[in-house]
Amino acid sequence: MSKQLMEVIKKQYTLHRSFCRYLAISIFVTVIDTIVSRVSEIFVNIIIANSIGILTGFTVQYFLSSRHVFFSKGAKTFVKFFLTFVFGFVLANVIVYIGRILVFDSSEAFFAFAVSKGFSIVIPFFLIYFIRMRWIKKDPDKETPL
Image 1: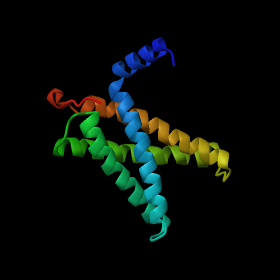
Image 2: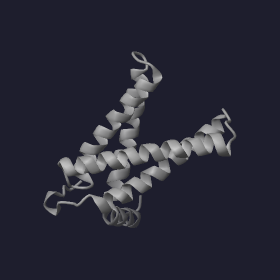
Image 3: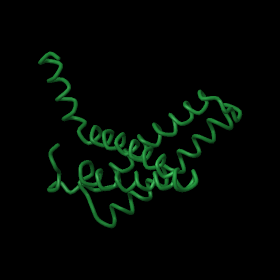
């Protein structure tokens, strides 16, 4: 890559550091959730396995994001994370329901699944990020470079 392009990327990362970190953590957590869910299916039913994956993902998301994005830990931060997690979980299910049942008329087609699942990941991701950024107060002394 050219030196100019690297400078532009570096500048954009610096301007949007928290969002970039949150995005990277969220992608990592999605991979962890998927792996844990799939492996858990060997031992327990699908619903319990999915729940284990989701809760594992939430726990990893909390520890990484509270340290590297929000720079805030403790009981209040955990409660705020949990409440926004529940909100996102419900919202994702509502989006899947609207997509699969109402928009795609209960279609079992992969396209219906992919569109509904995609929206159920992307919309809550942005909403929860912005809610957490406003609701969780950063401790500026604890910001860690990355």
